[in-house]
Image 1 (cartoon, one colour):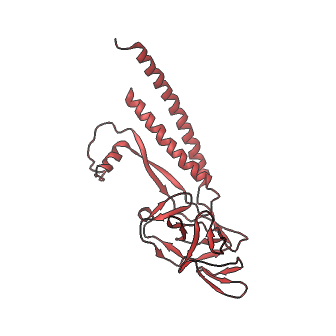
Image 2 (cartoon, one colour):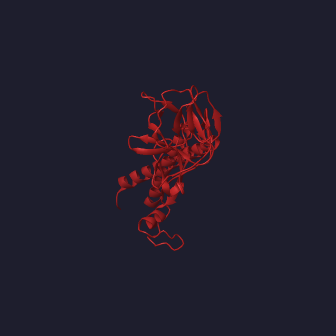
Amino acid sequence: MFKGFYNLASGVLTQTRNLNVIGNNMANISTPGFRQDTFTQTTFQDEMIYRIGNTDKSNPTPIGRMNCIVTGDGNVTSYKQGGLNPTASTLDFALQGEGFFAVQSGNGVTYTRNGSFILDNEGYLYLDGVGRVLGTNGPIYLGTDKIACDSLGNLTSEENGQYFGRIRVVDFQDYDTELEKTTGDMFVATGAPRDVNTPMRQKFLEDSNVDVIKEYTQMMATERALQSAAQVLRMYDQLAAKIVQIGPT
């Protein structure tokens, strides 16, 4: 009896986490450059095998017969390119291809595909709520939004041709092992970034790569699964209460 209860309870907890990931994707549909996450699951046995050091699933270390309990295996991020949409702002930028903008935040350098920049109070190119955008020689001072940008991110004044610097774009060898998603559309590096020459477009923003139809379908299926599991759990709870009332015979 209790084996089934534990299996159901673990399923509810896991599906709740899945629903949270889906909800976060849906909430960031309009966030420029946002990268969609997919929640993955595993069994409790496989997770235990991994934690005790045996990662060879073709020859696992036995830890018992109860392997139906599911648990979260983490999130997998999709790095598929989002669509590009034109804007009216000279401080909006989009990357056409692989790579990330580098931003100096309060906790160090962070990386993003969100090129929706502004000027801060001192005239530096800035990502709202995060920090100053980095160029190849540090933070980029503009002092004006009347700027032009070529395909490599070189910034010049539209008024007198003054050169302000080049927006830094970096990439990583392996996103799965060298990047860690923090909040929203931001990443921190766990590996070494390398400078790249990814083409850039001014007065464009990249859409999020969230598949709205897929996420909505998964959200509905997950909610139905949670409702069904909750009903069965209530039945287990009622049965357990009756057993306690009857007591030992």
